[in-house]
Each structure stands twice: as C-alpha cells, then as structure tokens.
Length: 171
Image 1 (spheres, rainbow, N blue to C red):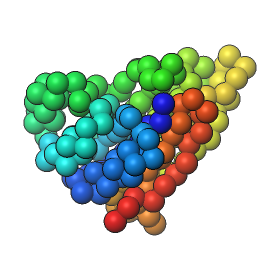
Image 2: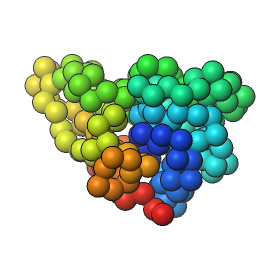
Image 3: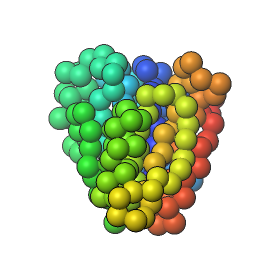
C-alpha cells in the first residue's frame, strides 16, 4: 500500500491538494496528515481527489468544530482522530502525532512499524532503535505549505517495502 504523508498545511489548501494529487498519480491510496490543518476549507480540494485522509490535531487547532463536522459528513473519507492516532494500514501498525518528541517516544516502544509526526517543519526519515531490540520507522514530512522552511515537502511511502521518500510539494 502506497501512502502520502503530509503535515503543517496551515490553511494552504491548494498546496495540500497538489501533494495529494502527486501521490495519487504514483499510486497512493491513503493520506496521513500529521496536524496543523487549521480550517475546514483547507480540505475541500483534497477531499475531491477521493483518497481517504487520516488526520490529527496540531498545536494550531484553528477551527476543530468545522473540521470535526467535515469528518462526520465525509462518509469515512476524512477521519479526524484528535490528539493522536493508532491505525493499521496495509498490514502495518502506525502511530500518528503532531509532536516529534512524542513521535520519538512512541517509536522507542517497539509497538509500531511506523510513527509519523510533524510540527518542526523539517523533513526527516530514519529508523529509531526501540526497546524490543528492533527498529521503527520515524518520519516527519516537514511542511507541505513550506512555511518557515527552505522548501515545501511531503513524504511518499510504500508500506509493503517500508520505503519513505521526501518529495517537494508541486507548485
């Protein structure tokens, strides 16, 4: 299963949609958003693309009521998990949070195949050693909007091969 991992869209709906479209063009069938959506309008163009989106809060909540309302009316296309998410996709256990320190801690448990986080606006892909004598993938897509960062980025992931590539957000 191929996925699109994004974060920190900060109300930049067109940039979010362009990253999701690029991922869909490469075969992605699911989106993980690691927080800081801000407003419900950010999602309109992305939801029209038809890929299910799993999202968590960030530290910039914006309008969580409108976002929750969109989730309730999306027929399962948009799943808004709240503070964090523990999901299974493509046979992999995945934890999603906004905060890198929390993501690092959860990767260290060894309970997950993949931990996704955001917040720092700095992309990172690495394997984190955990307490069960193995490694968990820890990924941060940076900011799909490019705010306060050298570039706007997202991650294309393949859950079958467990490969993750940082990609520039198409303009």
